[in-house]
Image 1 (tube, rainbow, N blue to C red):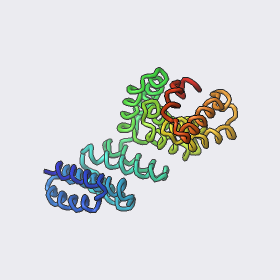
Image 2: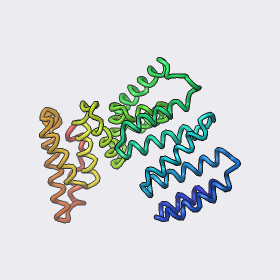
Image 3: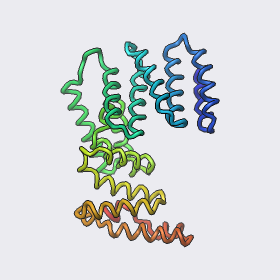
Image 4: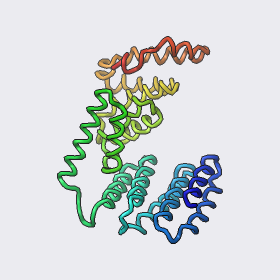
Length: 273
């Protein structure tokens, strides 16, 4: 019954009926009071609606805090997942320091009290990142994404590390998840301590926006690269790509976008990288 009610909450929220979804959520909480895991499931769905549909970050944070603070002693995966989602919300808001703090909290919930990350944990984390990077370079995009998703769950603090965000963005872009890749590149650009990745992130943004037919945005990022990193601009022959973007934008304006797509079957990576 609770599963049906949370599914109904999500369906209503997606239809723009978030207020009705929250009313269903209150009824679901009443029905689930005696079962902790079910209560958490309803609270998680309510927090998600407050965050994603209503953009009420304070209300969402209150829901996540209620889950975490009320269940710290419980060995439930859902408590850790709530803390990770809480950190994800702060990351989406652009509050990287608070996201990092919340991810550390999530990591502590997966360990016995007082136990810190071991040297073995750090080595395993580094090994997984190297594996994801190698798979990406070898063109094994799906496998790379699987490794990165595992890192997200086992080591949530990595979500605010530059290499992880870059690999996640690149794997999303190569897999065709352009909106997700744009989000990850933009998060990376908000991290000044990882400025070494910024030019590559901007090149990825230019490609992702091009593939979404956001031609002006793509050209904007190409111009930024030309001004800020002439060496990368030259090594990747981004002038050639700029001509492709500008030509496709003109074709779209002339009503010839479909034909332009057929004429330019060479991908960005093949043509530029």
